Image: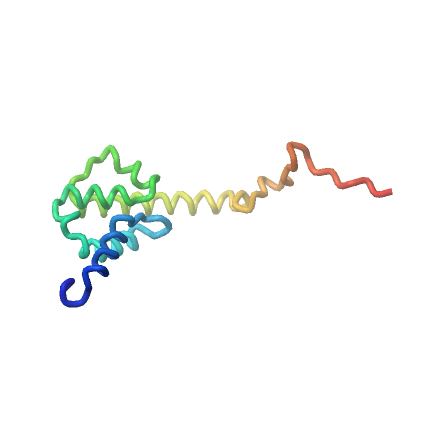
Length: 127
């Protein structure tokens, strides 16, 4: 596949993109799809199952990755399923938290006005 449709330079670009791949703002499913797509251009980096798991895990967002450390999953499919569950749980917690304390998101804490310079903002005296 690669030899027929991609030049050596194009393969190197895709391999570099794979090596730099991080989840960032992608969902776990989007990250996994991109990981799988780009891994075709760097088969030597993921042919060993342990390396595949490590590379996928290391590209996850820190809050997801830290939840996986104690599990020490060596199987790619197990890792993927587990991180999907963790992401779903985090999203549900964020949604529940956001619905109860929605005004916090705008920086308006419990109806209080923001502080300026460590003191409450006092409008200038106009005489």
